[in-house]
Image (cartoon, rainbow, N blue to C red; front, side, top):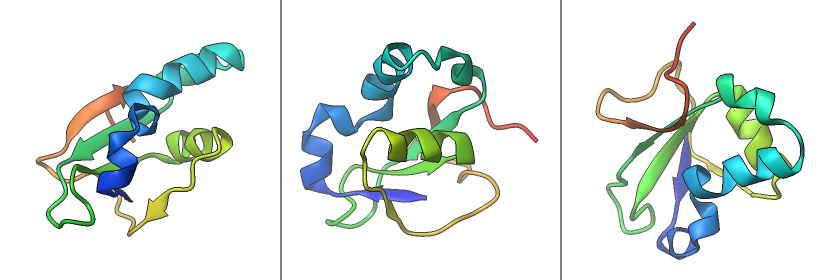
Length: 93
């Protein structure tokens, strides 16, 4: 689980649904689109104003490869029930 602050959310490039697709295309890694899964959930504190991102291992690796420095606040096997798929394919085992 990755928390994004109000400052991070203000930069549209910190939204995986906006920036990750073009990055994968530019780096010729579009085959990974079918293996990554990112869910989002609105944050519940001022520091986590907009969202928590639930990323599978593939998505987290890509995010880090993009030069992002994720604020990892925890791990869990599945995203929260209220989280919505924001990029990639639905979580599966």
